[in-house]
Image 1 (cartoon, rainbow, N blue to C red):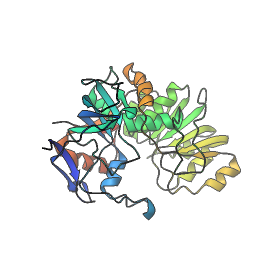
Image 2: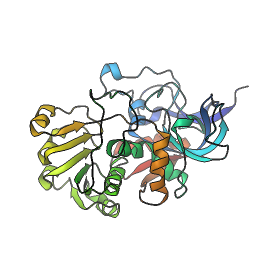
Image 3: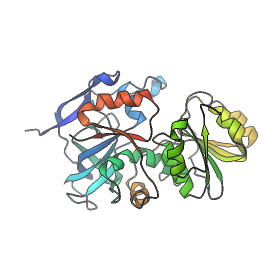
Image 4: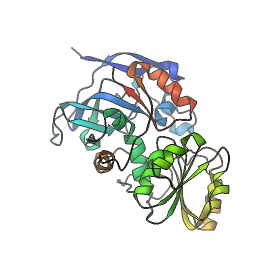
Amino acid sequence: MTEMMKAVQLHEFGGPEVLRYGEAPRPVASPGEVLVRMYAAGINPPDLYLRNGYRTLPPEWQPDPTFPLILGSDVSGVVAAIGDGVSAFDVGDEVYAMVRFPEDLMKRSGAYAEYVTVPASELALKPAGIDHIQAAGAPMSLLTAWQFLVDLGHDASNPFQSFPHAPVPLEGKTVLVNGAGGGVGHLLVQVAKWKGAHVIAVASGKHEGLLRDLGADQFVNYTKTSAEAAAENVDLVIDAVGGSNMERFLSVIKQGGALFLVNPLGFSGYDEAAKRGIIVSSTQVRSNGAQLAEAGRLLSNGTLRVVIDSRYPLAEAAAAHERASRGGIRGKIVLVAG
């Protein structure tokens, strides 16, 4: 008889209202996997995009899932069972992970559930210095910051460009982070500062106190002053917002500098960047347990901090998605097991 669990399932694409809380089959750990009892699950932009059918993507990138589907990639919890061939973890271990991203995103159960299976290679022990809610908010945002700024950590092909992304040295350099108040942005600020950069944080005014507390050396309130008017001769701009007119950042970057785009879709300034000698680069974040273990030490000792915007019970995932859709997020939104 199949064991059941509570989960939030997607039976069709649409708005937050299509997220339904109810019973779903409990997954079983296959060889090389670990079954994790979810204590908290982080919400990330790809969750919203998938719920809505990735309608903004080119047709060839749009998903063809098998419903029902359980969303979610970021999880923190406790090991409930071990699959064959797994020796690095034991039942009862507190762990966190970004689960099977971007592969198999629409083929298996995700993190909006009481239980989720995780490949052991994608799992790490939860940093001892933080709780499950903070840990659940970390994986995708932290790995994005790490893979852009510290170490790519894989040799998979890059869907956005013909060459692999390569982080640049940051010691003594000036780094501008656009979208610094968001889930990825606030960790980009902290990682860049840890790497020895002078950090300019760009966000709305309500985030200034937080971002200065997280280490930003300068703050630009984009609702009053544009980033391109407030900065010049920057070594690296990393844009965590995307959308239209990303080309404007080229004017603030010095010759030989770099522009990193977390979401490069729509960027049209490659020719201008080449003329200015500016490297434009992006990458697709990928699951990596070893990197979560390494970066987790910085979470545990307080060097890095995950800011929580809000938390919702798992059963209220639709309300959490409504909050995410309103924007102005300060850090991360997290679902908590009921």
